[in-house]
Image (cartoon, rainbow over all chains, first blue to last red; front, top):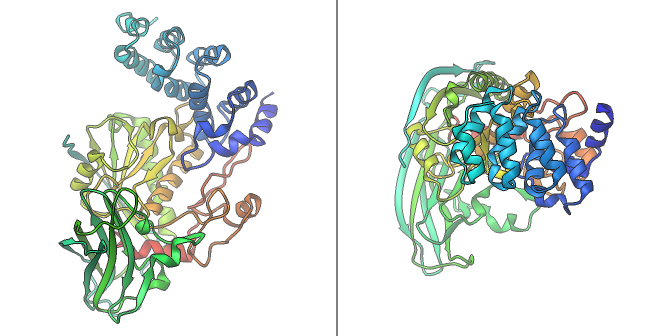
Length: 143
Length: 369
């Protein structure tokens, strides 16, 4: 499965945009179709190189598919994945772009993440968030 | 906000080769002389900037600042009255020599000579021409312009550039990041060292948000940082650069200014290099080193040898003018200034080569001495 994903990734048009040193725009990836979503999700595999590609793919998912249930579920699941703290940090940095229920689930999961950096960032995000259900998490101890 | 840098007290001087200069350079000390001039553009919106070069001056940088509208560099006339640079020669060219031709709302930067073939400089009275422009790019007469001229005396021995690496967002307390950055700086020193240029690295920290803005007009934080650094290349390390653009890094110009301005920075994000696991592998430290070398290459005057559109190139003679991705990957994929990393499933190609002509550009920058 991993080989298949990597094989797909390196043949992907999105990969060729996201690998550029100069600013690639998420908008330049084309229409926000399920196919693009799946392509980006494949590119978030932690072992795709260069390391910038999975990080940018994550950001583009957050920007282009912030309300897609598949993407939302992936973001929340990643919070507990010890292979993906960098991607969770990227999503936490853009918490305001997520739907509030998703943001709250993400921050709640991130507060209990295995990675200390993620837990610390989640605490800061909760404290700074203007959304009541997210901000309320700042008053609760980590799970 | 005034942000002070705190020197972290660590210095690295790369010496990976020996001096090979056989000229009589006994009087060469690489000194940088600064002249500041206030001028007003004429009725056609043109400004003639005097640059008086002594016998030992071998490069100069003209920085033109204007408080409103924009300013662009038009050309250079040498001490014998010869036009050695004319923007019109480059206006429709598919090759890039300097960003000085582009109108800037705050500072334009011309380093001359750009390439080895553009020198050496004849002593005497040179003139750099610039234009003051309105918001639509048309000449605007009688505009005040503040000019700084930096003249570099010839450099004896092996040249070096001062590098200051500045941590923001309290990253100086983050062992994962500082260890990776220090290893990357060592590797950067090797990359430049192979091209005959040493880097002299200091580390500092600044009380600033780790989400770094791009080095664009109007952000005075970088101006403040560079005021404390004074010269050379300032690399600011943050969590990310450019928000959603999530850049590897960005240089404040090609070349960047060697005086304090909002552009006087190479901004680098650590997280995008560390990747999904937010932890640096050996290969990711290599990528970070290559980004620091690449973006600093821009700051010192280098373009990509070919842009990722494969229809624009640098103005150097020894970098292939390829037109297709496969051909370019083959010809230039190991070059430090290539526009993207080249990776297969398990490894990325080291992008560390600096051509002879690229080395010439680096060594002509007045920040190298």
